Length: 357
Image (cartoon, rainbow, N blue to C red; front, top):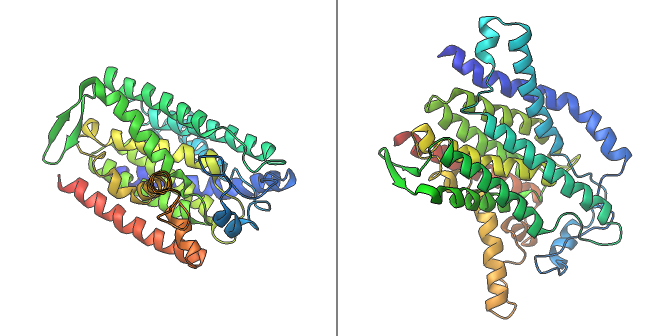
């Protein structure tokens, strides 16, 4: 029991230290090469400018580097490599037990984190280079959703074919049988959670939300005796906190796609890992634990639907929801802190429900 607890917390501390140590190197590169948008503002899904959002953020877009999410996935991957090397170079019992890479629990989440990071990094790079003369740059939304869909279908097929996952867990130990439909469900869940990644829009906001989500799933995985998966989730929390150290107002850099894409699609994988595969129902509590991401996506859907069906009338001053609160006059730090509070409370609620079943 003690060694399991240490195994979960040690990677978290290591990832935090590595992230903190790595950040000055990354920061120097980002500022030296002016890795920020050259023209402020963004456009909506129809390609039109968003005047309210642009007015709220016109001073930040062109002076703060993007790609801050590199801190998160670099620290995470470096921690994975560190514990693997310690187990190989010093083949003692303690290091062997602390090594948490395993085919049945962590290979897929690590792969997903890295794949999302690379696609997001490409989008960030194109966004920076393409924003000199235009507000919009980077990969198109269709291209990003296509990439996420392909990853989701591939991993869903792996779960169905290789891991024999044929349904989702229900409270009380039941199973909702889906058969091969688990594959498209996987892709849909991954895409929906990814769409909530646009919560990365206010200094410090996304870091606190993502940390709460991964911490919750670390607790669920630990309860299910998926210790390696719990260690992975805790490691990601440590890496996120290292990023958050430099992202609190005024932010040294933004997370952007290389961080948010990696984290959101990995959340979907972890939710399925803690579902029937782990003898629980991690997928059913996902909307609770990740509620800030869910409401972010829903607010966008509601706003777009309202404008199309009600002759341009909007429900929110600006979408997604956190920017609506900004437009109402809330200071950015108030929005951030209240989202953090809600995230922690809902994470606790989600974990409690997961443990009851």
